[in-house]
Image (cartoon, rainbow, N blue to C red; front, side, top):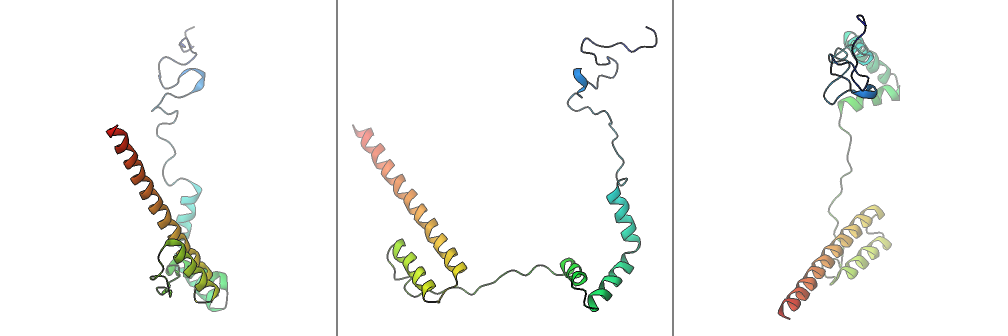
Length: 156
């Protein structure tokens, strides 16, 4: 028994203290504490190879883009210019401000959509805003009703 390590009752070596029974590592302990050295993986190797020839790669992409290669142009533009975002002018709907309740406002949006005064995606956004306002009003009304009920219960 001179060459063998002494095992605990769970079968883990007593000396190291890094493993629990059944081969699991204890919390905070690793079987490879130093780990893989940073920059030793395939991605890091690829980055180094690209960095060494970056000027030539960019020049080749520019040449191909100028020759009509749409993919090369897209690669260059994706890296240089930010993506374009849709912008809209503020929407002015006739009857929206005069409409009394939320149902009347939703009706004004639908009329504008039907009459071609408003695109469908914009109408959907305005209708979603009207629906959100309805939920806020509904929640506010429910809160007031609950408060009134609680006050009535406290008086009795």
